[in-house]
Structures are given as C-alpha cells and as structure tokens.
Length: 401
Image (cartoon, rainbow, N blue to C red):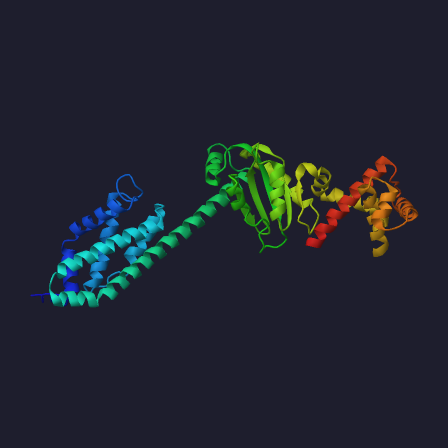
C-alpha cells in the first residue's frame, strides 16, 4: 500500500494546488480577460483563442506548480511563449501587458481565497515580494525568448535576402524564381533600376554607411549586400529619384570608390548592371571617394575591362617616358595631363603648373621626342591620352594590392 502524499504546507501552497485542480476554468477566466483588454488576442487577431489558452495553461501550470513547491521546468514556459509570439509578429509590449493582466488575475484570486483568515492574509503579504519577483523573472524569460526569436528571424531574413540578391545579380533567377526573389528583396520585377558597387579596400569598413535606411526613408526601394570589401546594391529609380540624385546621395555617404551601372528595365538584366558597376568602380581614382557612372567613363571602363591592352598601351606609348628618373617622369606626366585638362592652352597650363610658357613648350617637345608622338596630332594625342589613363588605372590597382 502506497504512502499518501502529505498535503502542502502553508496557505499559498494549498491555494496553488486548489487552482491547479480547477485549472481549465481559471485558464478560461485569464484568457477571456486578456482577449477583452489586449487587441492582438481573440478571434481574427494575430493569436487565436486556442493558441492563447494553450500558452496560458502552460504558464499557469508553471506558476502554480512553483508556488505549490514543485519548481518543475523553471522559466521554460514563458521563454517558449515569447518565442512563439515573436514568430507570429505580436508586439512585445502587448505580450507583456497580457502577462501583467494574467498576474493580476492570479493575485486577485489568491486574495479572494485568503478571505478574512488572518493567518492566510499574513502569509500572502509576507510572500508578496516573492510572488512578484516570480512574475518579474517570468517576464524577463518571456522577453529573452522573444528577443532570441527576433534575432533568429533577422538572421534568416538576411540570409534569404542575400541569397535572393546573389541569384538576381548572378543571372540565376528567371521565371517564378525571379518573382520570388523580387518579393524577398521588396523590389518590383519591372521598373527602372541601377546596380551600385562601392569599395573601401578595407574589409572591416562599410563602404556606404546607412545607405539602405536613408533610401528607405525617401520611399526608394533598394536591396544591398556586403561582400568582403565591397558593398553592392540594386536601387529603384523614379521620376523624382533620378540617377543624378542617387549619385549625389552616394557622394555624401561614400567612404571609398563607387561605380554606378547604366539604368535597366527589369531585374533579369541585373547581371549586366553589376558588370557595368564593377567596371565603373574600378575606373575611379584609386584612394578617392569618387562616384562614377558607367556612361560617364567609357574610356576608363574600356581600359579596365581589358587589362592586357592597358598594359601593352602603357608600355608601347609611354615606355621611354616612364623609364626616366622619378622626378623627371612625374614632371612630364603632370605636364601632359595639364595639356589635356586645359585643351592644349599653353598659358593656362603654365599658370596651373606655376612655370613659364617656354618651360611648358620644352617639356611637351621632350614628351614628343621620348614617345615619338606629338600632342598636336589628333591620332597621336588620342594614343597618349589613352596611355595616360591606362597608366593611372594600373598604378592605382598596384597601389591597392
């Protein structure tokens, strides 16, 4: 014959056992009060009546079990409630309010059960601090579960968005897959878009800090991805938010070099936009915060896209000049660059370089002797200009390695 379990000692333990014995009715009472007071609960709301009663039962069992002297699962119940509510997208303040309502109903019932018995009331008042500390512990566990789930949801969303953007930019999304990726990224399938690539040369530094939030505040849809030392995005253009306005906004935020591809009309064309943005970014001045549009730098883009040609052109046209001692080489290169900047106007070149006009002519003649090309001949000037750009881009690439 088994030994009967002795009755729990103390009013609070006995009351908790009694409430566990009529738990169904008490669950319904608490749930009804929550539905009446908190809009996110009840029929047609984020949390169904069935789900509310299920989690209410779990939490009440945990509370009354603890007060009856059986700690059981500790704070697992409220922690799980927080996670489930986060999955349903219920605001945390609403959940905590529901929890406070349930705690209030419990306290009112305990007061009623104590009645006029002085010993029961004395114990209830003595244990009040413990009871509300338990409620606080449960609230913290609920909040922790909620925050953990929100963090995990953000991770999942970020992974899904990265995968969707990679698929679009890599040309791996077509048909239904393209629509799915567009929905994940919050972008239309058709419209006017550009691809942006920004580089810092530093894997620990964000190339365009806060650009996604800044665009979102303007109502501009965009999707961004960080890859090592690059920041890549697709931006939607509108009649009010033009490519020129985007370029100005990027110039304000860029901490490194930025390239913008040409506009295109559908996400299926993003792979071409990415290639253009990469070339435009590579064509910017090394070490600068320049923002360059693909269509504004076709010569540089052409050279960047054909590095073998750039190397051959530099060596063939500028080889003898580049072989000079550093000072002589730099003086002649600066003079030739000034010649193109000032459209061959000797007086303007002399003023820019702080030297005499005859000095400018002497240097230009020396360039002609070294390269075998006179800047006054259009064909020769074109070759020298292309060679200068190729040298600048190659030198910048080497310096960043």
